[in-house]
Image 1 (cartoon, rainbow, N blue to C red):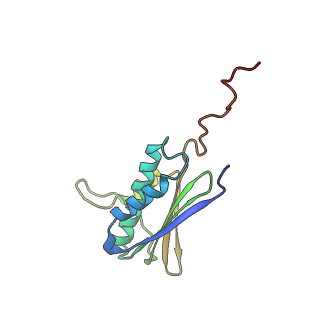
Image 2: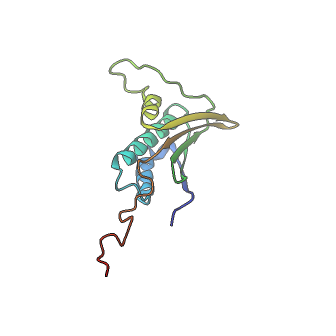
Image 3: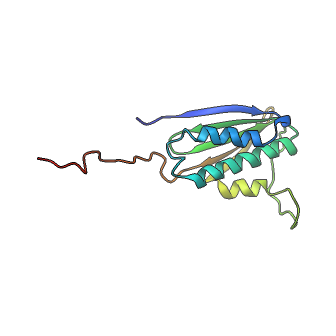
Length: 147
């Protein structure tokens, strides 16, 4: 049976820190049929979540509202904050400790975008696993002897 769509949502207050978002995301991803076979995709998603929540907390001075949605093809990561200012990619100086979040998400995600809304903005990134519906035994009768 194939799942048509599923999703989770959670708000992360500034006081919770980013670690809570990473851990929450990793636990949700464990339920995906492709997660065990694609640890690099899981790690990329968790890193993107970390960067997006950090941006909401540090730059927007806002709680981060995270939504994960699986549509059978793409795991959508959306983070909403209360600041309508869109993030911009910049070139930080060597040794600078911030300024790479947008570049990291852009590099990790298959697609990404952002949109202003009435009360803030949402940044969304799409991650497509190589095999979204792994079937360890595609033909259960293939190895059986027939008489």
